[in-house]
Length: 343
Length: 214
Image 1 (cartoon, chains in turn orange, yellow):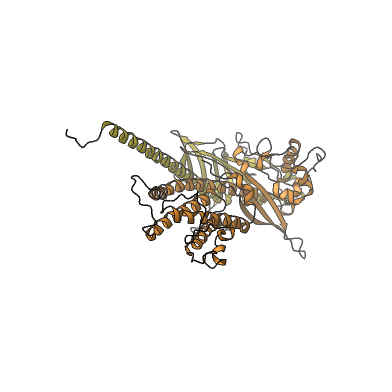
Image 2 (spheres, rainbow over the protein chains, first blue to last red):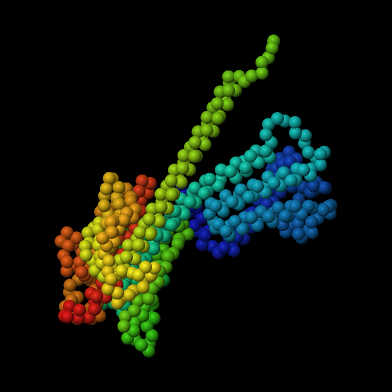
């Protein structure tokens, strides 16, 4: 079962405070609706049809009276028309709902867990509100219930209890499974990062350079990209721009040059890449199995040699493996760093 | 006419069918929970096995001073004997060595991983349903390097895959890096894991200046 909300991928790139504001706005409207439910359901009225009215003077409410939370604060808890006191319950419920939604967004991000948690808690607040409020209803306001059968509140109660009992089984099973999958991918990524570090230890430290220089063919025995007129897109841009390179490059390819992000390296470039790999590391490039396409591996080298002692070469190597898969929808990075030295 | 208070046949039928449907649903959920639970546990165990054992093999290989045999499913090497309780200290003066052998054997439909230390009897590490045929692969530092007195003058080292059929002893002595790939399959799960292990002591002996003119 795949519950990841891919369509929300673009929303995820927005800053957290901005999405929180949007969620706060919508959830305050929801809170307003829940207030209606709490007030009308115990009375047996329809929750949709008659427009909102003042409970005392029956005046139909207009826009300035209907802004969640703020209306209550700015009208200092009084009706605009008759001046009767409006219960702080309305503002409290709205604020509570906003608090719940924003808090669960902050703790879970834009995931299905967030949606389920927020909806269930809102439902619980509704049911609890109805239960508490129905005790305070004046007898004459209530419609006498002489019909047999289940009331709406009873059904809601049952649904919430059922959800509370069954829900944890679902989530615990699914989250355990997802955790195991994530764990596995991290172990594989760690293996990949270590592989690269161990390969680099076979090189004399003075020869160790960043991936970008190898791709551009800067170094003895490496060939430059002679296909620049033939290829387009990111594989050509990588030659010129370090940013594009570090964002897109990987050295984990399958047999046909397929790699992370469903990209395929153009065949000529792949051939050149394999040649450069052989010349630089000394190994033949061994393609990875298809399942390794979720990993993106890059190696950055920083020269730490002191200028007053250029004989003692010291380099800091950072291998980054990024995982992007179904278990890691938001991506995950493993960084292994080490120092390599020559004297 | 006397009315007996009792259930009618239709009421009973409805009650039966409802309870059957409910029981069926509960059974279905229960089975799927158990299945996911098993699968999850299988995954977690296999993850742990792969992680721990790879860590152990690479820790052993790190102190290797000499490879004695390398087959796709077996590797044996001489390793510096470490004092008890000190696992990560190089003692270059130490002359105590022990032989370690890792082997993968197919027995009774399961694949067993063994670790043998010295003359002790092999110790079983773990078993799986299936395993790839080539677990260990060695890379030989090419002989051209020997003609030069120093590694530093060469642009880059060059390796070729060790030929496990010939078991050439000259080549065997020149393997500083080993690739470990494990494609393990248990009853419920599969994992593919690739990594390499570098043996610093063998490498430093190989690239020591003028070592072959002595």
